[in-house]
Length: 184
Ligand code: ADP
Image 1: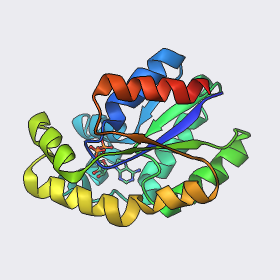
Image 2: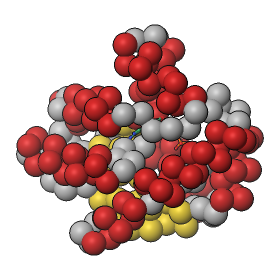
Image 3: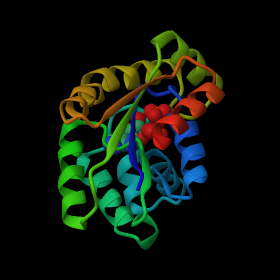
């Protein structure tokens, strides 16, 4: 049973790799960023609440993402494993996830730390052209990553639930490494 979460700075390739792996394993790819962006497009109450934070590169309030993750992991297609992309993003969300999985009777998640250097990720993000990929917002997202999300590397490391993959490699090389990890 595969339950993976992805850590790593914006632009490290979390979205690309987690989609490929989820397809390969035939389990859902659950991206909180994708779900929030869709909610903004649809102008749902969630989207309206999240938009201002996302445009500025800030994290949306825990409650918003926690509610959506809780609902999503309870669905029938999530009972045979999943890949979470973009959650948890801070320690409070990680403890929430741990408690949620226990409540749902699902086993613990393994964290993949997809590490990449700042200059690599900034170049990639500037080429991507999403609304929150302006240089100023990218800089803020990297700051938020270092302050809020990077501490999760130790959180999962302390629990012996962490694997690290070098995200500076080509996408194909990263995929190969990830498939080897899953098979191990
Ligand atoms: P990236 O990894 O490129 O930063 P995401 O699509 O994962 O992109 O996230 C985009 C934005 O969505 C974040 O900057 C944040 O505002 C919001 N977001 C996504 N997931 C979370 C989360 N778990 N907690 C708070 N905000 C989130």
